[in-house]
Length: 265
Image (cartoon, rainbow, N blue to C red):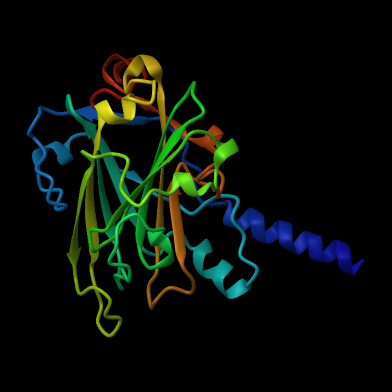
């Protein structure tokens, strides 16, 4: 009887956490003119006013064992964030705005697993009909990392974790509104801009074009003094696994955007 009641309690907690909206809609990539985005991390260009920003949410299938943490996060995302995507002839851009009351970045090196050292924004890109994918990080102090996985069957090999970014033209900037690595005061948040070179990600055999159908996931790791635990949010937020690429969502461009009913939003 106790075992049955225990299982019921776990299901009840899981169901209540799943009350947060599960977001799995395709992502519209706004087309911008070359040079329209100045990569400074501030997101002040007119290009970032186009389209609709998408919110990151708690993952629907993540359950915390401690009730105090579960209860706190059931109220919704405590420090919110949203993102947009844009592209010109040379780059795919990601622009992200993040609320953050305690901005943390304790690693001063590139090509590290930055989420182990502080706040991190992660982007995952994968062509729908190929096994390989990209994993790209930025931290509030501007440190970045780029990893390429030929397939999940080769995940975890040291060769996938190079000391130098495999994308030579990749650029990224972050802008902090507050003080970095000082939990004695209250920060406001940070923004980030990423520029991912289309020609370089296309050199792996699948060009970054609408015809080849690329998919996407974005993930945020947020440490803060005021949080009950490290807050992780993502889009799409169906499954708490950044490498479960069957749950990535499609990117929509041009005619695809119009036919999907997204035009003008």
